[in-house]
Amino acid sequence: MKRIISLFVIAIAIFQSSLAQDIVNEGAPYYLPKTAFKFRILVQKTKFTPGEYAEYASRYLKQSDAVLEPKTSYKIIDLQMQTIGVPDPSKHFNAKAGMKYNIQKIHVSDNGVLLSVNTDPAPNKEEPSFSPARKPAPLNPRDYMSEDILAAGSRAKMAQLCAEEIYTIRTSRNDLTRGTAETMPKDGEQLKLMLASLNNQEKALRQLFEGITEIDTTEHVVTVMADAPTTGQLAFRFSEAFGITDNDDFSGSPYYLSVADLQLTPEDTRTEKEKAAQKEDPGLYINVPGKAHVALYNANKIIKEMDVFYPQFGRIENLSASLFNKKVMTTFQLNQVTGTTINLNVQEVGK
Image (cartoon, rainbow, N blue to C red; front, side, top):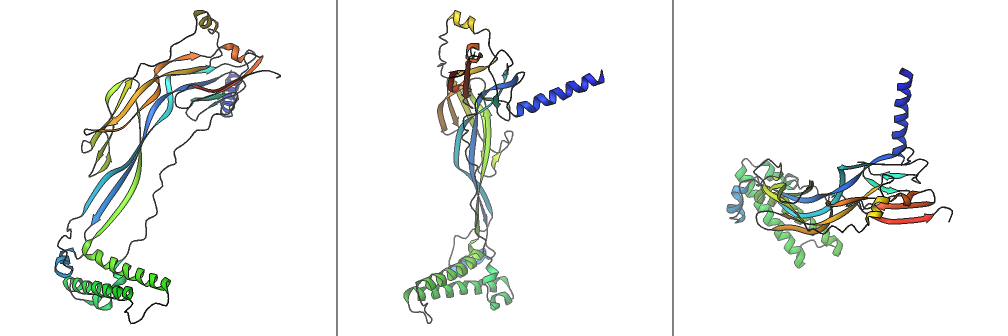
């Protein structure tokens, strides 16, 4: 008895391994997809840090608008909505094989959705993931401070000397651009280098009064599904103070998804005789999707909207056994989002 059980376990392991290689011997389970919505949200974070000498900006640089308090804010700079296919638990089937049907292999996705039969799947167009640009290294003001500034005995004195240094840098830059400097560069390239160096010095020292603004952009991916028409399904929340928040965090303003059934499912034109002939089937099914109008909106406006084919509002049909008898080789691919047939090809065996 123990030997029989162990052989049974080994047989299951071999069968599972064969499915991973897309080879069908005794049949293979699969799902048809239903449509979900993926939102790719680019959020820009702006962080302001006041300058070390911000309170002296008015006195020494005549800047009355220096900000003394730190602040962090967020805003959505881009939002993309796309449809994706996910397994539909209510559409779980088993493709039959063996002596009766000419089903040599099937391809399924990593999550079990049927992709193709007797041929390779159609290419899946994946959106490239967001990659933030490399930020330049921050300037360190102390790298540009003179010995007198660093040796000053108080913050007020350091602020005064830094302001004087800023004015000196500006004078030097003006002399270079006017051609009146005591030591002029030999050519235009050297002039560019000298001006860039002076600009960096001034920028670093001005940070001590004006503060630093850092900007970072991150991508957030949110997936939402709706199996029935809906007018106010929460998609995500966003806060200008905290960015994307949890759905139960009311500090974020809600963004809603609406899905309306357009009642446009194609009519089943098969006769009763044709339907009866298809009762014997090889276990291969496809979606016949309806159409939906989908919108993402918040309290102020509609953000995104579009019409899409939507299998949740459609029906399924089984493929005829005649397509997979031993006299023909039938190949087809499925749309990975809607589960409809694409690139169906039937050839007589031997031709």
